[in-house]
Image (cartoon, rainbow over all chains, first blue to last red):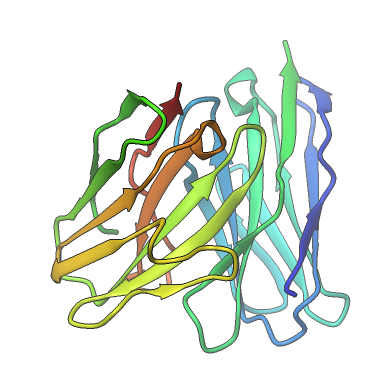
Length: 111
Length: 114
């Protein structure tokens, strides 16, 4: 049974601070990792993908992957109230197109 | 990335009836996926639909309850049959990524069963 674990939160950070979201996964052979943002009542929106160990930066977002530790994280710099949403970590199994999602972390950015 | 149109966006259905959800993609894709998101929960894969073959269902999901059609490379439908209140969820379709960018989702169908 493939599992993806996230802290459900809520995680509250002040505006302008760094929000740090974490995710662990159980399938050691997983190859592809994704972060989605989901606003209430909306469908998930892809914000980051990462495939190799290390950091990947895109604007205010940085994804970090450590396959040895089976750990992936998302940092949001200069957090804005508009970043308030649930962030879903998703893991793609090796050789498949199937995504396993974590339960999501609810982020609240306080003005 | 592909643009996915999904409809209806929401519906309220009587128990015992069925709802068919449509998913249209603006480009040809081999694989389409159907997910369910129950209230307050994350996404769970229902099935994978390949054009020209039977859909592959995940554990806990059966064809009689969730029949899927995939008549061509840009379209798929998911039917949720014999509705019960437990079927009240958001249903989402997704497609294989055309590049290494990642998977995108349709706008979702919010189903309420009364």
